[in-house]
Length: 292
Image (cartoon, rainbow, N blue to C red; front, side):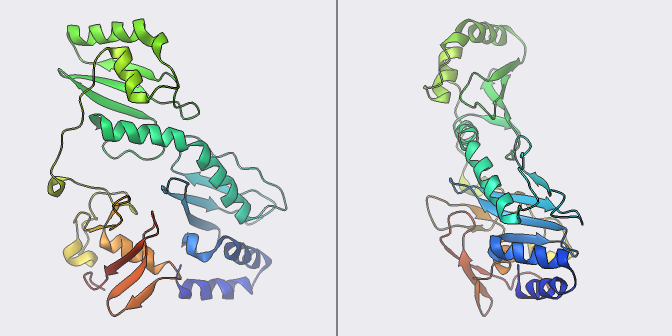
């Protein structure tokens, strides 16, 4: 959130109890975590990093009777966030409860990340953090659909086999026969191989230059086709974090916009200096390549 927005909020804060309350509560959370703010201060979006460094955006809708009425929360998560609210609650309590909620989902997302990097996932191509199923190519024009339980991700998943011919029928019988062999203390991929009595195909290595990588901020592979973006219109990710344990990809346009919203970002000529939104290592991005 830039200084202009903060100044606008200060002016609004002088005009009513509601605005004063929201302004002070944003300060408690920290302006550096605020991504978007509605003109009447009833809509807010905060950036939250979980313990594994995954980036989440929590959107908060406030009623004019706030704080008597609890805020409405939406986020890219597999099931609704159950907010505990009282008349004395504040936005910092919402953020804290959301952090605790995210902790409960770490094993769920880690399981899905293991599947995504180790098996031939064909759907969804760009899974959001709310999606709990994976369709996997297992060869011979056959596929399995796994549905992971967000509350118990290491349990036996629901599994549906798709395809025709004896190969699918054979795998279905093996799954039914061996389902009792599934154990929570065994690695997920090892469990799958045990039940199906075969090693599933691994992803085909794709040259890095041919990959379409989604942006860590807008979650799209390509920017929209827009005259205002100039030469960047419709382009893919063009900036990667130098931290090899992170290596998150971004559109430089998105990263520049995000850095502008952080009060600690420094600018020298046409370069913004700040921190990666995932690992917090230093990043620097040029901002003179988009039309004003």
